[in-house]
Image 1 (cartoon, one colour):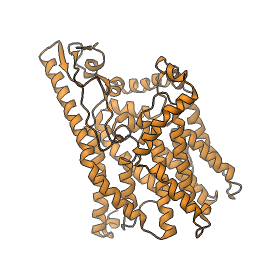
Image 2: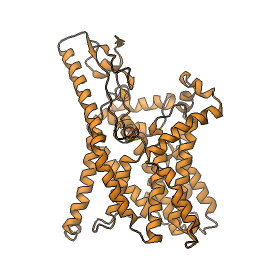
Image 3: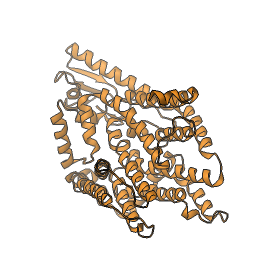
Image 4: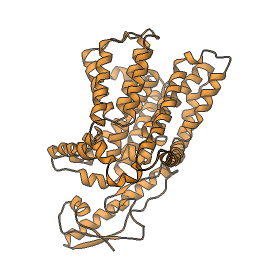
Length: 461
């Protein structure tokens, strides 16, 4: 390692070091400022056995995703564990995204890969669906951005299989790790896992035409994905939640009504990713019609851009069947759109010899710098309110007061709707009541703040 650093120019080390330090600090800061919400106070357990047992209950009743296991363990350990892990996981996300596009690690000895990594890092925060819920909220990070990692790894494996024409030689350890990743992918998301099995089936069907021989490890890894998929969709929670009373209006609605309701959701999705899902249609069409480049459908980058473009729209469209849609539901669709975007940039760069990745990274950095003050201040404002509320409750408890009157949190708008915080107030529920209504809560039932918040029969006054 020291030899590697010694042979690398200082300006290169400085640039790479600054990029990762800023990115890690940004993720850490937003994760720190985002308070515990209602779910955290409900799910937090006093010992690891109860934390895992609660996942078992959730698997039967409400949420069967594998990410909830990590969420419950983190809540048991404390928020410090999330502040340590989340910057690392998001950095791995950026590097895994890069590997999927280029099938190699970034070259840290030079700056040739710096623009691409910078662009991916910026997009991973500002151009994914609802980053406050999918990156900085503990439950959201575990169930969305962290759970998307196996998708990146399995898609990278498929690319390596294609490149090697089926001659990819994997060790037993690698096969086991990919099997585990495939299982986690299957249990990680209700839309990304079916998409993955669909893409793999298409790959297997095309293998004879591409002269790719599928080896034994291919079927082992796919079996892991199928097991995870079966564990997720076979969970009682999937059907219990859908059949709950609050979703009667949805289950009894017609297909036409559901599709009409979904139009506004699709509109949010397109704007959330800065129009990328819609704008990508233009270069895909123009490049396909370019008579000077007749082999466009034989170009791997173009075809991968097209595949992930269609996948992003499919992932967004199928959500019409979901009873209650929040912005974070579009996370996998938005990430797929960004994958398509990066493959298109690579196609344009190699085909038209234009440094488009470099210029796109500069534009993204400029936009991020402009957005950051308006993006970060609402987190500071929310954290300040949470600190004041907790201090007031602690003071009331120390003075043996029976009740305390508190106000709901106020939420400041971010640079756009997608970058605006959507927080589950522990006392007032999702987004609370009117900002002018307060609540009196009991303080004498328990010294545990979770009991004060969730189990004290609060009265609105």
